[in-house]
Image 1: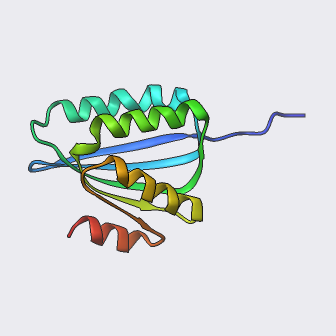
Image 2 (image 1 turned 120 degrees about the horizontal axis):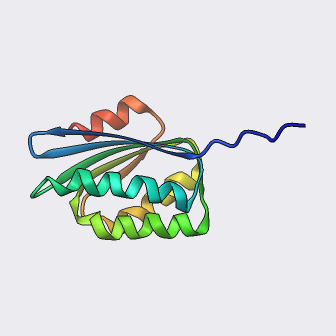
Length: 128
């Protein structure tokens, strides 16, 4: 009997447009501490070269199932460290708890965050 395949992780895309940094994140499954050990240096590296970053984020959480406890702490620390650099975060989801998480997360950033269930609406809002 084969072991079931469990997919989890975070994909990241980074693009600079003038002085704006645009991050696209896609979370799959339940994130672990090991996932954050991989993604945190990538985000740190992207932010390093921008003197006054104003970051817009599109976070696709439609296949996201949450965090392990240690990973949730990693996410919180990342948000506190870089929260003032975020201009807008659009969170695409399909679960009620994701909308609540988006509201709580907005307490730790200086910019705006908003929950969406439609990709086009999320991207339109980010580009306003």
